[in-house]
Length: 83
Image (cartoon, rainbow, N blue to C red; front, side):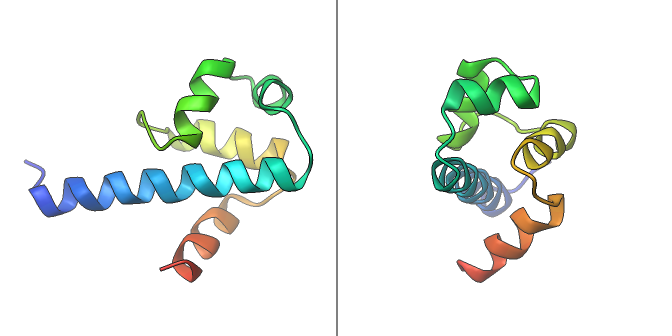
């Protein structure tokens, strides 16, 4: 069973990764629809991920990273730097 602290940590991690996706997309002057298409996701799904909502699967994060020309590990390196 997931503890309350662990759930909070997961929620924080989702928000941090979502913010990072959003910032990377904006830095590339890419529309939400464009990134969603390149990553093979529905626009609403990507929007929810950027807001830190919904459970982002590793496969989806990998596709997002690829669409942004990033390595998957970049999300976690940057996440650690922002703490």
